Image (cartoon, rainbow, N blue to C red; front, side):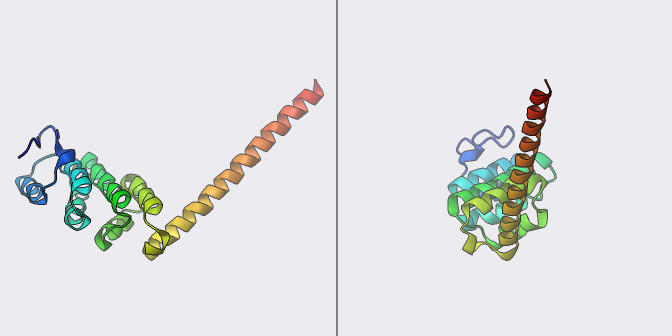
Length: 154
């Protein structure tokens, strides 16, 4: 058990044994999402992926959140995800628990390697960012014009 405490979560970011995670899952242990992050750090993508997906379905919302963090971590470290992880992220959508994991995937996986939905999401994000920038520029310009009018009237 090499210092892993399933009750408190202590040491689970260092877990490097997929079979130990499987055993904990079968026993109904807590902190499986936390341990999924450890698997993303310490195991191959092939080993970590099915366990991350299982953790994404846990009843505890916080632990599901950690599972999505594990998916984002896997994208950062590997520059790719498995087809199953892409599918799980797409199913969750670019909102809520999956938002940061999808953003990490869009940042760290080369565009040419992204599945079609992720390519579309990356393009849509760029457009959304540009529109937000334009909106802020218009707001700043209107604010500056208002200040100038007030100074001119005084």
